[in-house]
Image 1 (tube, rainbow, N blue to C red):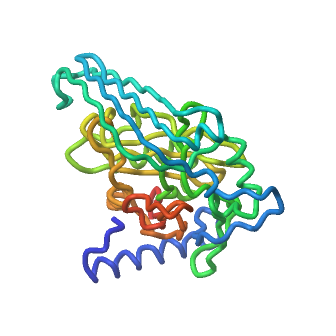
Image 2: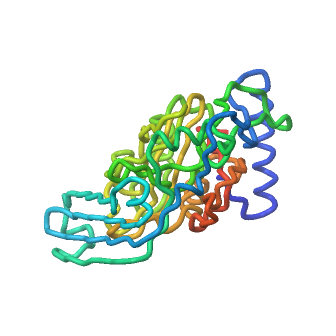
Image 3: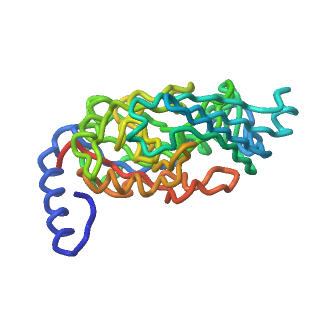
Length: 312
């Protein structure tokens, strides 16, 4: 486990890691890196702060014996000024295969209204940002750490955040907070390993009901490749991770959900839970994504990412 609960355990784990790293010193199975600064581009002048919008969010939930329907409507005058549309509206419907066991009421309807602030733009605007002098607002590059392990060929840039497609507009949604090592062949391999190691009073699975999220990889938004969670539906909350293949590593965005309408309530708790049952280097990367460029904190995320392995 990666959690260090006492000095003796810490020393044992350090010894185990040194043994492993020594064994691969002549190979490229593992390359440990620190995240650094994206090289400044000479493209258009774009600033993520210009993507900021604020207004109100109206969430309507309709629960029936067979399904849960969640409609979110986000309204902002900036949307009208920039794109000629006054709101973003998305409806998601989730089936209830076992309504007698999912802890939701048999039927219910309710509406929640709250203030809303987000960073929203079209895909081509986000892509232009990656080619601008402010590319490091969205991307972060890996630089080799000479203290640990051999070098490997990593992609030069990784997204710091993942996004939600809302009415064909891409909204900054949350942070990348874990990275799967080059031991994993792809996102499926990584997700399956997390699921098989998962602990708790629930069954971890890769058969997950979730909404598609996107990460900016190689200048375009890519939908997540795999999912893993502490339950397939999560009507009353769960630990949930989405995974993207990025070349030689797997990017992971993990969070804790609350009950319907199913919002993220913690990133750090989910990272620590997966970290706790996987072989890992806790907070190995400094990703500089504890808050978005507008200064809004991303819940409890600490701006770092944990590196997880198949085995040490």
